[in-house]
Length: 476
Image (spheres, rainbow, N blue to C red):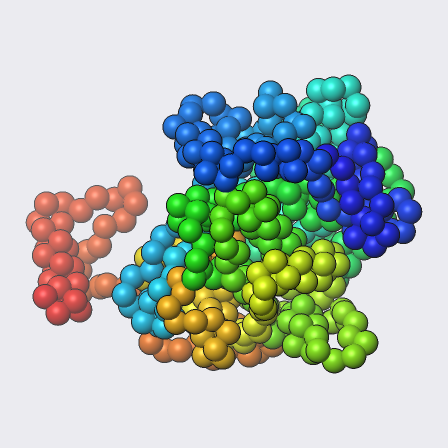
């Protein structure tokens, strides 16, 4: 394997952890020289190999490394770090939700990864590689660092803590812009947590300076090993559909753009090895409050079009609130390649409102899902893509919910209580608001209290009158 620079196209050894090209400073992607040799094995045989591994009990082949040859066979299985990541469930939408979206679709619930988000895929890869360097005496006493909007820090601290004391971790978060649930995760895993004034982009600049001037291991998606691990999302989708990608559309949120990079690259590899015969459509979704990638592609046909970072506004899709995505050079490179292989425009981008994001999340979860706000963003994007004829009605969509709904439950609480700040530009739909009701039925003079149980007569009265009142409210 080797690093390939997307700027000057030079290649570099993986003997050392690199984040940017030493020659021109551009971002890198990992390439495998063995990929061409892997083509000597038929796509049908690869499918059988991956399907056979489903039955194995080897932990190193149970997670993302079920696809070991695609994710870096240079890493020996004994160096693989497995914490239960990958192979998250794909849940078909019920009739109500299909009617809402206007199309048949599935949620892929990446919130069921160990730290509660898709970031565990990339972190398993990055930490397995670092563990391999340590095992082979090429590195020691690693301090891993990252900037985060919440999910990256949770994943990084979790995987680093498993390898403690060989690896210690420190995370940089934008002050007051991470949910309490997300903040609790790196603290609980023992990471050093630093809150920085500003937004994620400001934290990223600080952590980039640290990685360039100090002996630390960067765990953001600038790290090409992170991108490599996230390709497993594509491999799982293909396997879950028995490798039939005909009339399929994969819908993903776009923040720092590492995820959509990995998804495209993963499907390209599968197609090259003839494991799949067709590339699925890819739709990237952004909020109107943080949509620099959408803006770039919405004016792509104009002459001298250049990517322009933007100043973001607050978004309920907090993890994607990024105005200058690190992986934009990777996206530009791979979108062109993906469309060329497809023989048509097969990657598109959608921008949705904050209102659409919150309403879609709540409607999804009222219909049996555990979507985070970013899962709401992708559902809103799917619905809008259909209305703009960017996806065909006879397609089946796979919608990415990147994290567990519990991580972003504060936004639901504010929606229900009507306390969302005005800058989100969200007006709660009364039909979606759900608040608890205190039941105190008339005729009850004594109520149970902690440490003060009621006597039998008073308890019987309490039970009957309370049950009758609930029955009345429920129309029983």
